[in-house]
Image 1 (cartoon, rainbow, N blue to C red):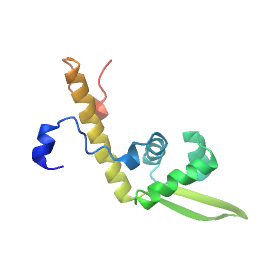
Image 2 (cartoon, rainbow, N blue to C red; image 1 turned 180 degrees about the horizontal axis):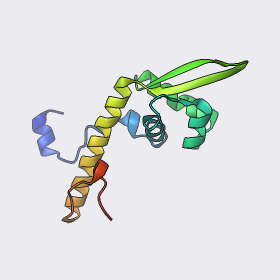
Image 3 (cartoon, rainbow, N blue to C red; image 1 turned 60 degrees about the vertical axis):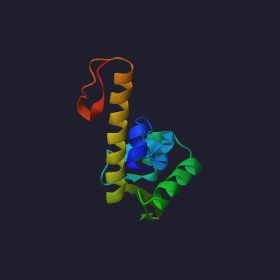
Length: 126
């Protein structure tokens, strides 16, 4: 979409990245954002409430998009998989949050709310 077209469609929110926007992947990225050194597969699975298969598939999508790095190895004799955000993943996630902040402000404004000034991370007071 060109800038002219975007000006005519102010609520198109082109920055809502479909790879990130999916509920499970949004949860995964949020969890990994809070743990910059990464998380073990089992911990990520528990935090996000996913099955082994679902987590593996979502991590594959995020890895193919260059957002997540998955490292497989061993701790003792047991397999150990660690997942963490890449630099690009961290940047794209922060860009995505900025679009969400704009969406929240626009929705509040469209609903006639006067308190559209964002607070920390753009969350509006109730």
